[in-house]
Length: 105
Ligand code: FES
Image (cartoon, rainbow, N blue to C red; front, side):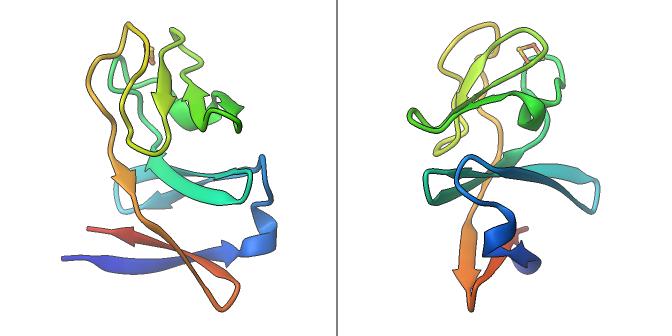
């Protein structure tokens, strides 16, 4: 069942910023790529690396896994480079009344 969870005020994740949140047994990284917000599961599909702690490229809208360097597209969750080849989960992000919200299921 889809659920909408409140995260934080928009200004707390400015362009280039990120926040890692927990929801049930998941950790989810929320990123602001030059004003657009994206959320991906904080667990690399290669070897469970802490993906949301990796280097963010706001121009390309990608994050690089700090463990073995796979680069993931934040828009789709698809890995763009090896060793990962399986996409990670992505989550819709909404902004309502200045509040960032996440759609999870
Ligand atoms: S755990 Fe992310 S590339 Fe290996």
